[in-house]
Length: 243
Image (cartoon, rainbow, N blue to C red; front, side, top):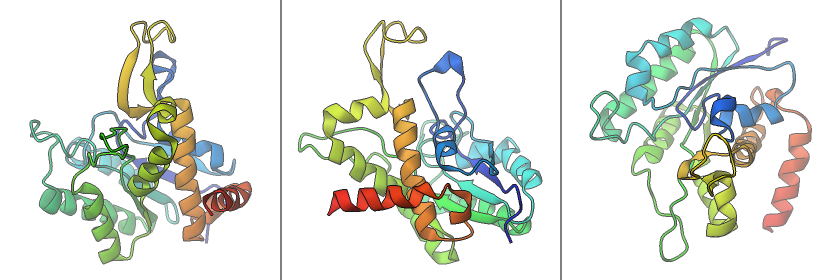
């Protein structure tokens, strides 16, 4: 049974995290997803810049998620970008051992609170190769998330796959608008301009969160119950465009 005011607790990194006016136009996926949620849904964004599964756990942030969750709430689990940082022992996790084990720790938190978990693979980086296709910059991490989801029967949103296809469809030029790429003088927070193909603009957060909303709808209830009914017509629109 879904509560009157269901809560999403989102654990993640800077691609998900809440931003404020000092970092505008950088926008996290948590902010973007609000556009697709019913007003009755609460979103507690616990994502923090620079965190991996390891540092998130070590800093007691997973404990915070545990105590924030109520029965029939939702735990969104999205990591990978910072687990790759091999030069930083405070963050790095081997994908086939510690990263995998940590994903199970997040899952046990959801189970312990009788909450609904969902794994989300990382959003792609915008790194085009000479063939016009995106380079794989995430290594084994997305596949490990898929594997744990499959092993445990946990719902999966394969954002890495969906975002890769979307960015490739847009191409190198149009996809710049989704990421923090802009010339000098355009934004007061970045007077010298910026070239950042990991973090998202308002447009990028909106579009990629839309892919998450599409997937939540297709997973079905109770996840579908979080979304505005208009999301269904959005899915039909994009399905027709892809045919």
